[in-house]
Image 1 (tube, each protein chain N blue to C red):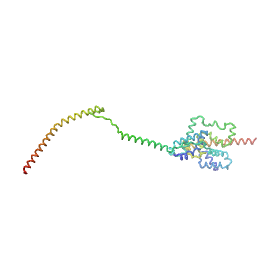
Image 2: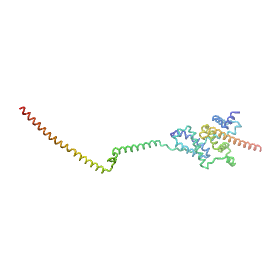
Image 3: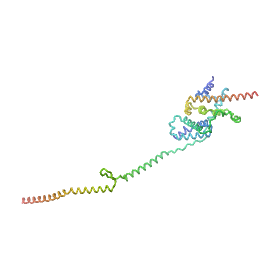
Image 4: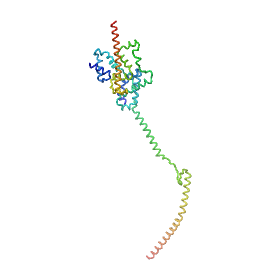
Length: 167
Length: 175
């Protein structure tokens, strides 16, 4: 069997390689083929002709906005930075106002007037207690003053006595 | 994948995409629309294309799947059936399509979609069986079988044509 016939059998059996098929195409398109192969010539011409069909429509691809993502990130980053600065400034200049409350006998009391009156009452009581407890101290102060005066008299007497002795 | 690489890898396939779409849809305008649509879809997913091993097979597979979806959803792209063979056309049309090359193209068009797709991917585009398998989602063995069936059908039709021609010539000579 001639090589072309052999290749044709493989071609129609679907077992030929791309190289063998290329060999067949070149043979049938060469114009120098045997008469018995002539009916198959248009087949390879058809394959060759179909390859010339091209897409005439223009393919439109959207333009890439090169810095789109970058500028977006820059914008977002900038806004975030400004927002963060504002928050920090507010926190620094206007410290967070804490809720005022007092714990009286284990209870949380937020009524400012009540707490104030309670504190004043307690302070007055403390004052009274202190005044009362400092009374003995005042007496001690008086004794101390009198003691100092006596001491001074004693010292003066001693000085007079010493002077007499020297004479 | 940037625009330059996309143009190099994808847009250079536009004619192959077009021929495949035209072979399946049997309609030039619809094939061009398909090329545009698939190109846009791939452009939108260009970031994922870097992971694709065989861009050509992936692209042509996308084209085929898109065309098959169109056929499914649009009745006007009905498959050509053997009953509506080119031989049923009027003698006038037959005269116009006397050119054997054009007739063979028609013969291929009348093959089942898978067979004509495989024939065109192999015999027109010159793709390897492995690549055709990726595009069609068939095994390489199934590709060989369908290719053989398609080629055999065309061969029979060519030989029938030849016999008819020989008979006509013989009759003319006898007269």
